[in-house]
Length: 557
Image 1 (cartoon, rainbow, N blue to C red):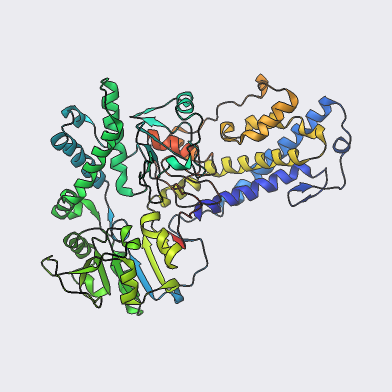
Image 2 (image 1 turned 90 degrees about the horizontal axis):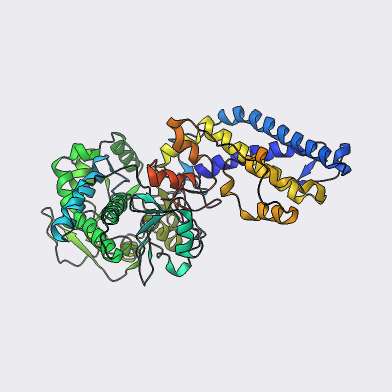
């Protein structure tokens, strides 16, 4: 994974810098100091002032070592346009290629989310009788990013990590941050029990109160929920959060189901669809090499046809061996009861029993088990690309053994942030200080453990450190607060790079995405208030859940 790779580089560099601290105390084996030539202060406790001086000398050496490593890391940057693999795979073994449609073969412009937001907002006003004043709220593309959780009963949006801990500072009620103290009181801590979390696909069901937004199309939904919440709160209107969530959810759904979005895109396809000249070339090359190809999408037939005609050409169906529309994923991958239906050229559903999936024909609904039976396309010879980690990819990998590739639009911008000198310097120094703390804590000589806590404030983000090391040191040595001269000064970052700088101070994931290493996975979007706070609490990755690799199986793009 790209993010994991970058963190590993910084971690390795930091470890080498930290190891330099122990040059006079013996060589380092497997991260532990062992016997060897030693300086006098290393073997004899000495006086407290001498020990302080010795330790700060090691600290300054580590700082110099970390700074010296940055140029070498800068010379080996990650390629934002590369393909990242989580597993060994030879493309010569792949015989069948499968694709989702939306945000996989076709990418949309920034205008689409504004369209969805405005249409859903108008449905709330016209069909659900919400105050007409909410029309003053406009879609903010920088407000949220994928992977956030929404507490349906409390009407708050937040980032929850892979261990079900709320990331303080990322909790929003409406458009305002909820103070950490209020969050802790509300949830009696910062941990959310498993039974309150959403199911595997991010849905709030069976009484669960947390909904996770993983779909790219869910960005307007998060913004609309927050805007309507903001209006009610500012105007002291008493409302039921559960009803608001359901109404917004239904309105977003109706934008798709009633064809509002599809009609608008078809009417001005150049405005909403980003033309990709290489799409046809890639598909044609696969076909010329004898590869089978199929398309499985939740979008309707006429919509897919017009989009593919625009980016591939009128003969696009000649490239695909099987085309399935309105598949209703993720049910398509799990429900064995729904048979395929043939769709004729006019979009009319036929009642024929399907005995074979024919090239050039379009099918609707169906299920994966029938698909496997009719095609025989099973196991690792199939590589399927999609943009939704759970609905598109997880089941195919875990249950059916397909190879999978995750199309992550946010990955490119996050990699560019990670390639900045600011990010690399901060991550290298963070890992160096972490290694320094670990080396001292593992040392058997208690006099070396004494000042460990003094190094903590020099880490880029002390509030993100695990509680154990600092708490332990304070307990052992009766330290209630840091001396004034050792308190960390604000870590000032260039204003134009504040999002990147905040992103650089972590090792995990963003609010509106989730999961700390080593799960590692696709990155997150750049963002505004909620998005920036979310990313600043972790590394730039998408929110994963319960150990499921965010890139599902093979590739991230």
